[in-house]
Structure formats: structure tokens, C-alpha cells
Image 1 (cartoon, rainbow, N blue to C red):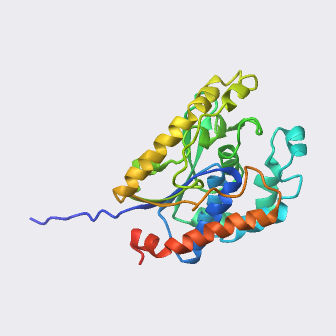
Image 2 (image 1 turned 180 degrees about the vertical axis):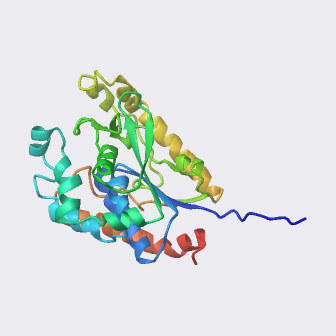
Image 3 (image 1 turned 45 degrees about the horizontal axis):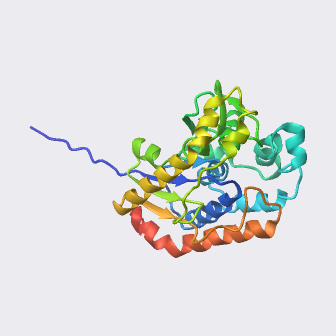
Length: 292
């Protein structure tokens, strides 16, 4: 009798937290990864982690810092004027369609042909629960999923796509390591955009949101408990790191940038911090994913 044994191949994943312009730190980290030939079987991005992280699958290091510094002072990109005119502080059509399709072209073909799975996290505005969407082609529809993942409440409209009404994924699942593990990824590199010692405090934002979100009370509830969700996820990540299931890369200190930034020098500095942090740990990351 012959016996056949299947070899179970370990799957490696990348988890990218959001944080609006703190995501320039993530861009610096992922550019160093790409420049060093580090490949993952899958990745998940939340908010800015989705908007910037998709360039990993399209294999375009340098693109995030390039278009952000080029357009950060353009009112079409991000401005109060755009918010008042469209309901989105980050111009939906300009940021998610005109830039990738015309002004700093996104490599749609490479994205579609890459074997790396790429997921984005959104929050269902009607239930307050996370939705995980696998992006395959990065066509117009999937770019809308990425936009939804990064649509911060109050300064963004609810995005309707895939039969759902969606907002920022960070509301319901800010650091989706558990999702990647449940999806079969055995070892994951987790990129945070807050320092390791960060503890998220309660916010009164939800109370301010109530008049604006009468139709979506579950979003208000999710925002009220967001700090508890976030801190619980950090606790889970620390345990996973101790057990060798994740490798964490985090800023050495609070990043000198807010949710919105119009100064390209500030963006370059945050990006530089990301690059420096990645270079400091690059050999450890290679060993963690058996690429050394």
C-alpha cells in the first residue's frame, strides 16, 4: 500500500493598520519590503492601510510618497472646500479615480496578475460590523471598496458599493490580525501606525456624530466602543508576538503628523521614519518569513 503525504505550506500575511496620514509610515515600511524582494501570500489593509497598501500588490514602491507629496496642497485632493462641495474631505473622484487612472497611474494589470491576495476592511454602516472584501482587479468598483475603507465618519459620505452602505474599516476592526489568521495565514507581519505603548482613550466623537448618523445608530455604537475594540486588539497582537505568530513593526514614538497634512516635508519625514524602522528590522523580517 502506498501512502501519500500532503505537504502543508505555511502562508505569510501582511496586516496594515490605518490612521490617515500616519499611513505614510506604512508606505515607508512597505517600500523597503518591496525593495528587498519580500513577498507575502496575502495582505489586508484598513483605511489608509488599504489605500496605500494596494500598491504592494501592484508592485509600485515609491508611488505613495510620490503622489501624496505632489497633490497634498491641491484642493481637489484634500480640503475644506472639497468637503463642503462634495461631502468628502478627500476628493472621491480625484483621489480614487483621476489620480490612479491618469495622473499617477496605478498598475492595474500587475495588481490583477499578482498571486498575492489583497483584502480591505470596511464597516457596514447599518450593522456597525466589519466587512472584509477581497480585491482582485482593482477596477472602478474595487477602488470604491478601497475608498469606503478609508471614508472617515463626519468628513466622508457613506459609500454605497456591493449592495452595502460602508464607512471606514477602522471603526469596527482597526488591526485585523485575527481575520488573517482565520483566513489561513499562519505568520503575519503587522504594521502599526501608533507606538507600541499607545493606549486608545475613550472619545466623545460618537456623541457629536449622533445628529449626523440618525439613520445609522450602529455606527454611533461602534464608535462608542471603538477604544475597547482597539485596545483588545493590541493585547491580542502582543500575545501573538510573544507566541511567534506575528512580527510587529511600529513607530518608535508618536508620529509628527495628523489625519490631514498639507506640508510635503512632513509627509516625507513620516515616510522616512517608516523606512528607517523597516531597515532596522529587515533581517529579522526575512528570518520570520523564512526568506533569509
